[in-house]
Length: 243
Image (cartoon, rainbow, N blue to C red; front, side, top):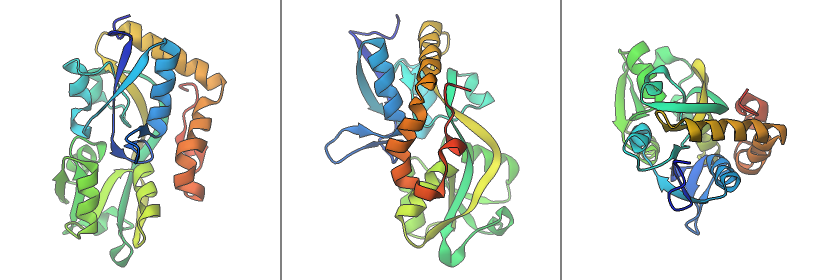
């Protein structure tokens, strides 16, 4: 199998995106994506090596063979399918917009004449450039920089996946997700290098097998429920067994 370089599976994940992929205080990777990464490596019988990635480099790390799998909250889009091969989805998502409660944005029309923060290489950036060119975008490379910009008041609102902004707003008093669902719902999946059929087939079979064990709902309970509580429901976010 092409991926087993010295019995190691190299997976690109986020290091700054709680509760999906982040590094905890002990320096260990944690989160919903990590649960799947650990399980894939275990079922393949190899060690896992996590490599932190920026949103904009998720496809590039596969193309340049820095990693075997990208498992970083990677939304499936037609544009990205030209660059990488996606496995079966394990999550669904749409865009959300978070803003200060004092200037709460509840409708996209309110963003006209205001500044919206987005992270480079995300579906939010693509969506607003295509559908709302009239809205001024302030772009940052890292999610952490985007959130800091919102905290500092360098923009009026921030848009990314609703799963993320909901989680962030729960931890940051004074902010609220005024738009909880924008654009068409998308799916999130693991990606491999174009043409790595062997690894792709393995991931798909494993996801179907894990679905029978309700693996993704268990992963949600462990990693996402502590963050979301009643703000989200597992069935609204989880795709079990790839379907």
